[in-house]
Length: 112
Length: 114
Image (tube, rainbow over all chains, first blue to last red; front, side, top):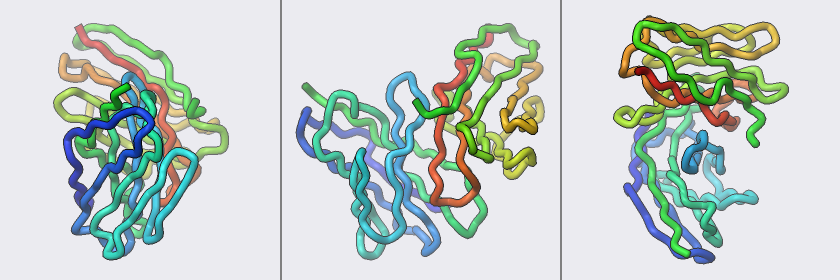
């Protein structure tokens, strides 16, 4: 499984935008970029995914670098409820590996 | 609410015992995944079933087994329990097996071995 690198922790203030980076320099052409988050005492929650183009949904935006070696999850206005561990995960659509391989993720703290 | 139901929420038992964790996937989802989350190992994939058949295995111990039934619910059986098996066990489901399909997780079963 291709590897991702994320900062261990980040801090933000409520109602400000948050940019969570992820490096995946060994990404292959068949890897989707997925983001999940895990709130305290809950199971992981799907946030967003993309392949080559930037993506938006009701939760967040995903900006993918042109060379696909990095991506950024954007929370447009952080709330206290967004405090969680955020995981950037690559999934190969040709490899038949549907499992999610979780790293340590980025722990996001949101200050009121 | 993810639509994935796991029971029980908490389980306390002793070493050497056997337990069964149950998962009901989201309506219509054919794939079920089991993950283990411990403090030292993080979230790790155990096993996947698709429409009743085992599809992929991760670092699942031989003492652990799982199955998916015709109604698509799944059970994870853990036997000869050891202290190190104390962890959160999550079930996830997805519609199929494509890499662009999200997995939806339950709230987990917290297993404590005394």
